[in-house]
Image (cartoon, rainbow, N blue to C red; front, side):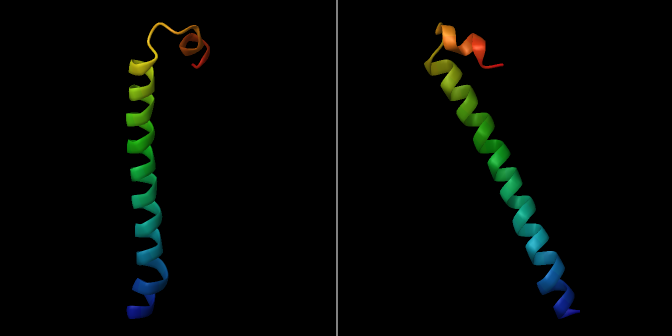
Length: 47
C-alpha cells in the first residue's frame, strides 16, 4: 500500500496542484496586464 502512495498518489497530486497554481497565476497576470495597458493597440492583437 505504501508503494502505491509513493509511486502513484504523491506524483499525481504534485502535478495537479502545479497545474492549478499555473492556471490561477496565468489568469491573475493576464487580468493585471490588461488593466495596466488598457488602450494600447497591442492588447487588441493579443486574443
